[in-house]
Amino acid sequence: MRLNDVITEGVADLLRSQGLPQTCLVTVLRLSQPSINDRFRCRTRWTTEDVELIAEHFGVDLSDLLMPRVAS
Image (cartoon, rainbow, N blue to C red; front, side, top):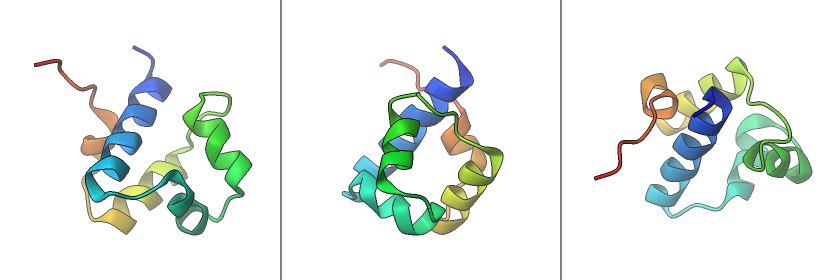
């Protein structure tokens, strides 16, 4: 699995666990909705700053967004 895919999955899992839509990242990352959508569709790579801002905003460790999920 590529790092961008891992980050996308980690961010999606985080939002799902909080019951939040992807659109909440527009404010967190100060990006347009199409730019957020491009990240979730892996058309645009997540930046280090994106991941840091998300982790800081939601109070999670960077590792929570960067570690691939293990199927149970």
